[in-house]
Length: 92
Image 1 (cartoon, rainbow, N blue to C red):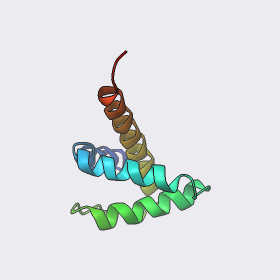
Image 2 (image 1 turned 180 degrees about the horizontal axis):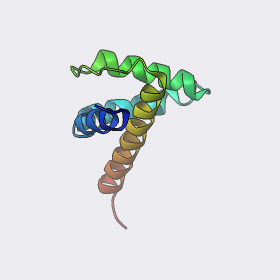
Image 3 (image 1 turned 90 degrees about the vertical axis):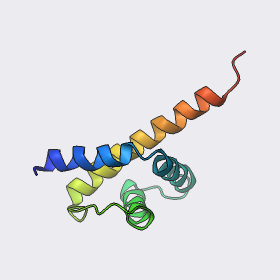
Image 4 (image 1 turned 120 degrees about the vertical axis):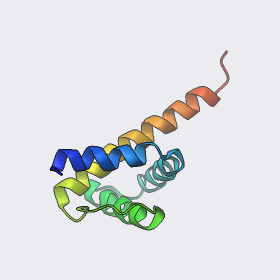
């Protein structure tokens, strides 16, 4: 598979795992306050994904793929978290 195909493949798998998206979103919220450099955050999230999922994610050691994949997942997790808050908040 090409770089783009791999990115879409793994993103598709994890995008459908809402529980994992919540975990990622919570980690980002918690660590975003103490990790200032994006590389530190990406490295932490990479380890978190590796240890928290049953998915075998190949080519994650390639820096460009890893960072693109993690940033994509962070955006998805953040969007999912925002949508939860919007549906859970009372409408006045």
